[in-house]
Length: 341
Image 1 (cartoon, helix red, strand yellow):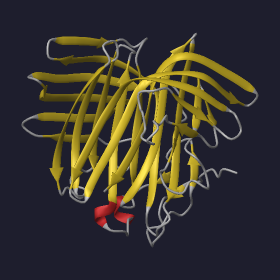
Image 2 (cartoon, rainbow, N blue to C red; image 1 turned 120 degrees about the vertical axis):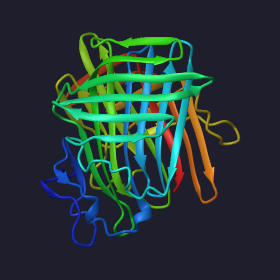
Image 3 (cartoon, one colour; image 1 turned 90 degrees about the horizontal axis):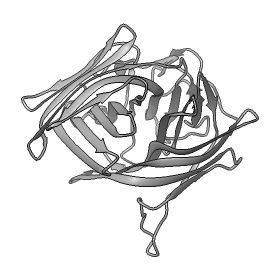
Image 4 (cartoon, one colour; image 1 turned 120 degrees about the horizontal axis):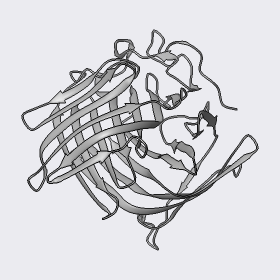
């Protein structure tokens, strides 16, 4: 049984979640000032991924208290290549000033080497970013506008098994995109008819060591918009999972999911071999053929983040409310992230 959130503040006077569960919008109000846990445990981020199937752009601004980060990735799906550069600002502790809601407010980080501006304006999201020498002398810039295509999104409030620790998260799928980016001599236009994206808006107080799994799909298929958010490892999800399926103008709640990542004979994950995604009810039955493993391993003494964000093509079936939605070779991503932070 999954519990749906009601309206009101997110936290009580002791800094614990008032209720845990899922919603289709940010019905609970987040405020950094209400947090009572260790300030070093506060994690906040805005992450966008936009793609038209030929190229993809990933943009991140975060404030993890001990550090803030601005990161840009360019993904070339035809040539199966990825390029990423990140800049770290130490001991930010909220100075990045990420908004308390995804509905309004702007997110901004800059230095002499980069400028990243996520702007909310007139119901649209305007992403204006630049970075010098993203890789091998190639500068990057983008100017992209995103608009919602449906009113519902995935929202979850989950506690950790430790007082005053929680995660409040929204994933806005099927954002319609348009604009351009340049990368060295490459100049690419994102056409509105072909471009979709997702926003991962995360706020919370995290435990030191954790592993999460997340997958996102946003695609056009046979005249329909298809998207999903699948994942686990984001705290105690006994009240509700973050699994949701989007089809045209509707959102459908799913229960459990398991990421079956292949391993070799030594028990080590082989991220570029075919994965499967399954559920206890059998309503999720997916195959995933990877083409790019965007891997990073940040290791700074007691701080470590080992990330495999894998891009590839999903095929399979999702069953919702008596309907079976089957699709083939739709571009998306799935990740496994281990953090000590």
